[in-house]
Length: 227
Image 1 (cartoon, rainbow, N blue to C red):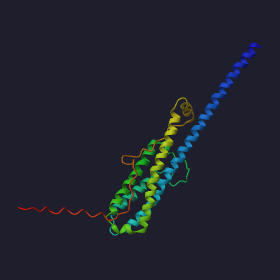
Image 2 (cartoon, one colour):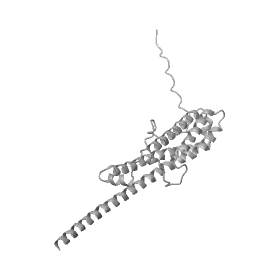
Image 3 (tube, helix red, strand yellow):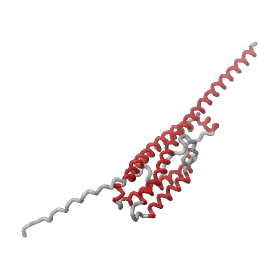
Image 4 (cartoon, rainbow, N blue to C red):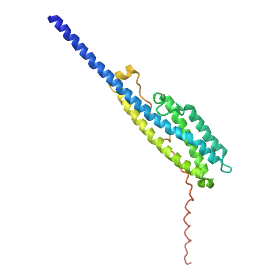
């Protein structure tokens, strides 16, 4: 009975250890699933706002195109940049919450960021050219697009930061020991950060209020003196 009791005690201890380790493994893996879903949800918000900007551009181009003698090359640059964005969006125009592979692929994320920044640059150049066409500032459609684009650019900047925050939380969890053992066995890998490209840390200024510039200060009267 002594040996049997010892064996049963050892077996019970082994079972208890397995239950503890198994429970820890399941709990840790489920925690990673929750963090992964948080990253995916937040990335969906980033994509949604970029998609909103993508959808606003055709109306902007049509409105600006109506101005007499507007520079064709500037409009073509915006259209081409928008087309390149459409080629890298994953998924393109998908519903909220749709799974995207971008957070799991640093190269794809970098291509996405570069295409979006290229579009931002084309839009910025368009706005510089627009300043030469004061008749556009009284166009009601143009003013409405101003408000929509301003709001969209601000939301993009906010949601991008929130995504990076969620990615940081996920990455910290899957890289720390001993949880990283579970991450490696379960296939959880660090998420790609949205780093943008040079010059993209700040949302581009979208301002169509081309009011009259203040008149320059009059030149000082020439000094008079006696000879």
